[in-house]
Length: 153
Image 1 (cartoon, rainbow, N blue to C red):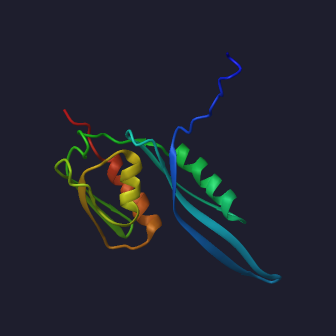
Image 2: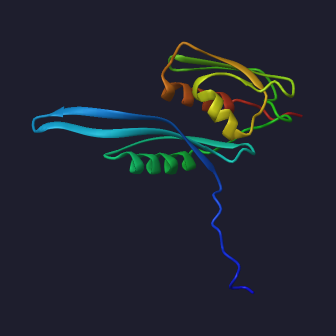
């Protein structure tokens, strides 16, 4: 009976690749090509992390980025299915504004912010990214915005 049980290794976090870049560096011997990967991981229950890593091939870059994201996990305070209060954060060139939304609204934000909030477990929020279209900067700005949230009373 015990032999029939199949031990399945469950993934604790879901991962989403936000961006893969091909980086070419000129050297005296020719071109040196690497790949950088931006990855977000989350459990859809309030934990989320973002990682950025480089490697000479895409799969190792993604694996390294996942490890980096696991090291930078943060706890996101939720009030039902939304964020507890308005938040405005400036990080480098990006400005992120988030505000709570009624149940059923969905995620009214764009770019990488939507995927980060999905994996964090937020279902209803309105927001805006101002000032930057760079996915890396926007991802880190979003993490700073989530860090600045206070727990609801």
